[in-house]
Image (cartoon, rainbow, N blue to C red; front, top):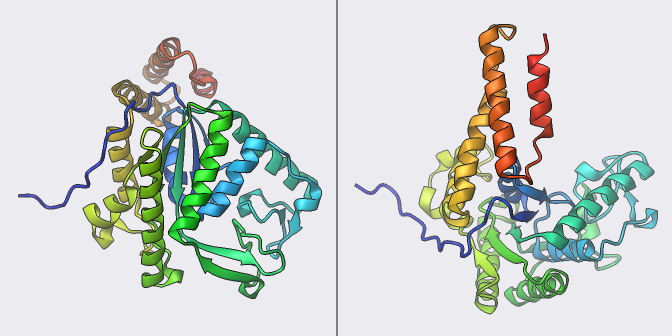
Length: 330
């Protein structure tokens, strides 16, 4: 008996190897996938501007990463929530002190720019085709920062505008990193404030634009159907969080498993299986941490970490080794 309708997923060729460098950009769903990559010790940078939802803001952020041009004090604004930031950055980069905000923003920019220049894969998740333009400047903002809505003009991008922005972004990227490939997804998060109909129109716009990009660049742009997996394969409110808009942790985990299965190389999957055991061992808290049995357990786990480091020299495992040393202290 078949109880669901599986989503067809075209395997990525060549598949992602664990040694690949990955930049993840886009909506909050991108944060979920990026967090799992980081947990599994991939070399990755996730949303150096914070969460971005619309294609124009993502393209603008990528252009800034390509140029690596630092932000200046003149580009900062003091927002109603009490912090200095820019119209492109998520509020997590805001700070009451202007100089501190600038350091946070430019520090993240430098890290993202350096990684992008070397990256093997860019993963982009588009969240919405709706954009907000400042009436005064006509600038599309990445974050409204709780500024009154009357300050903006709201507009839904067309398929053509979305394709043009993303294609121009890719052309810039390939000038500085010709071997870079992109996995592009549409977020399954439902933007209920747009109304259900408005959300569907938005997602349809993104899906058509993504399809056109894949047609134009079949060897460089690959579609991963996160949207279809949640909306059609899972298709049940039990796979949504309490807000009925965001996928539940169980749904996110399921999408991640499908991503690993179809986008990553067997070697990467083998590594992640081994690292999961290491991570669980590090998280284990015994009843008698001073006992010799637990100390031996920690020593064996540290040995496993060192063996993985020898096999995968690029791994950054100093924090885990330090944790083991701390656990072994009398």
